[in-house]
Image (cartoon, rainbow, N blue to C red):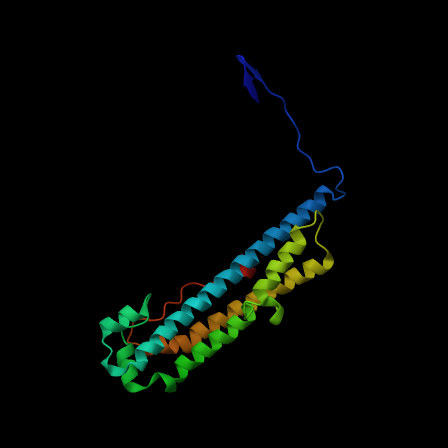
Length: 204
């Protein structure tokens, strides 16, 4: 629409695909659907990484509190714990030093192991193999960059990364309901490691 000299000029136009592109409407729709599905997987993986990092931070803070021993007051423990670790940590430290606590060590080891399946280790990518997050990002680029429908191999890999994400989600749930739950049960009657909900990408 153009307004000039008191006149309004308008014309209906139809926006179509580049005539040089050989992909059909069905091809483009298939590409869009795959990209949207993969975007959901990417979001779920990023949430998993953030949750693992948050739990690791809380447990590391708890470990520091316990290393200070029984002299750590609840107030100091709560201050060091940030978003929830603290409170009963001092009394827990009285019973067992951090380096000997099997549940705390197990939780940290399990979270570390899980994270290694989710994210590439070092900053120099050529030295470390890609993990789930990098695989998802790479697949997203290979599907969305060309103007073409996803290939059978790409759709197969999409199904595989969805299954791997669901498996990682189940592993995190097992850690939360296992060693972390034992820690929370021992820290009085109030949870001191905040876990929050976990998104299952297979149910989206």
